[in-house]
Length: 410
Image 1: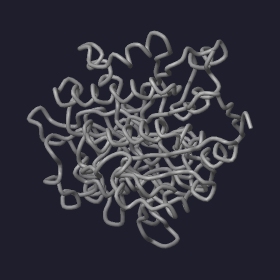
Image 2: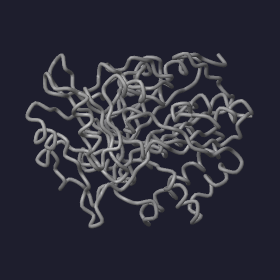
Image 3: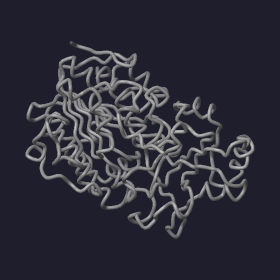
Image 4: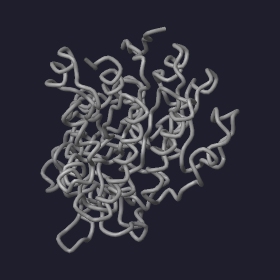
């Protein structure tokens, strides 16, 4: 088959291998700093001979939300993953959405596999693997994480010899966890075990280091080396990010936090529940502090009253009632709070001071989740044709990347 259709998009299949890469947390500033210092020659060449621009990510600007959008080609309102966590009002429990059972749309991967491509999905964080693997392994594809590479087995992951292929399993709190993803992709392509790849890294380095820090520059130089190897193997590359990253701190380096649950309780009384959809098992990245929150109100509380109060609070940039937020941010309304709150570029939202273990943070706080991390890089190794150049000039999204990579080359 030369094409396949899923979620109302048709993807053409080039004769060459396809590799789409999500560089987690890679605000464009990281690439600019590395390019300006000559540390990413392969990306520099792609920017000249291919195409480089910007795209708008899905809101909230979190990992699960945007990776799921990328692999389905649709916004959260369609695929159902509106955060890493949500409050299930039916069960009265806070639920982590790291399972394919929460998906309301198919991923593109089993369709590509059925169309004759050898599909491999490699992610740094295990929390994404089950979503990515949905329907793929039974079709003969591969899906594993660098975090759990040594535990991969054919029955579950479609591959059982990851460490012999890509090396020892790395520490998840390291730049190596991301580089392992790219190196595994190179190895799979070189061995002829895959020709349609999705490679999704982790944002540990971006949470820890600013774009101009030497450690960040070294990391992006190493990323560029793997991009070069993929290009040498003949792959058509599409590169984007799930979200950007910003410092969220006072001048003295301490986190700049609005503890929403505490402040709302002091202002209006008990009964508020604040859900922080950034929450996941990797607390050393961000301490469960991001720039987006869902607020569940006490019974009988007037939403407009609380919304207006929050909008007068310094550091709060947006506050919408559920239906408005669902429409503006393309979110699944049944998995949302009564209010959605976003904060300023340098501010994060928390629950209470006791809820967050800030000792888990490795250094100063850098995080994401709001509007200020919404614009991300969009880069292709091949020049775009006229139709896709025109589309790229409009409201292009990061979850358009598979379509652009497959269909957009001249």
